[in-house]
Length: 127
Image 1 (cartoon, rainbow, N blue to C red):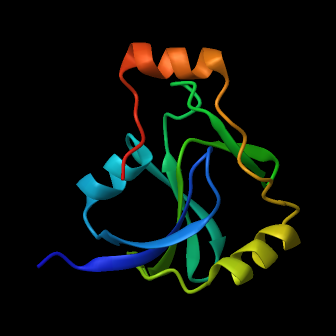
Image 2: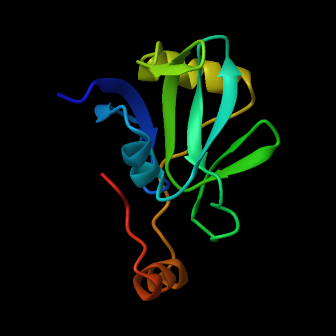
């Protein structure tokens, strides 16, 4: 049986939610719709996002540390160089992000242009 990790996911069109996902590179890439990039946020946690998200014009998600996270973000724990369960719950995550100047706004509906682009390219959210 594949090991599962407890993570918090934030999609551009949804609120934060906690879930369990398989701890495989293929599944992490499927969740962010492409190659993963790790963003260090603390001693034992960070986020994964699509490394090519801006090049692929993925929908904006939220600002962070003077940058813009696009596409789906996975908040995940780390232990050395391995991924593990996210050590934060949603309330703690919101507080940590607020301390870094990020307030997560309610999700914005995708614009008509963004929906038609996603339909034309076959892009879809991974679950």
